Length: 143
Image (tube, rainbow, N blue to C red):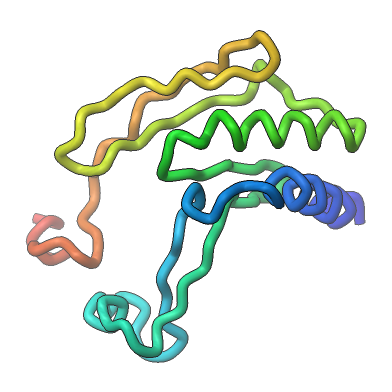
């Protein structure tokens, strides 16, 4: 019961924090409701695909803010304001920032602050496993 109440509380806090964010600062996920999940040809089609705008990814008792622009500082500031408004506090010691550049782009370390505290940066992920769009198959990478 406590987990459910916390999830509802966090969802409402995130809704308030992201209500004034511009749509261009969100990440769009394109999906298809029928057919194979990993059929990338279907996602490239412009018919029968749906797009959903997201600002955050909610986990059990955690949240990840996402943006593909430099609006991450703005999003973080709005979340800190919403947390204060709801009587909650962001654990600055546990909060980390990850900037994952697109392939072939140079890495620029993010500088995100809450109040006067600069948040800890973590290194970008390295691609280790093939994804459905890779040219090589799963069988060739398993050798």
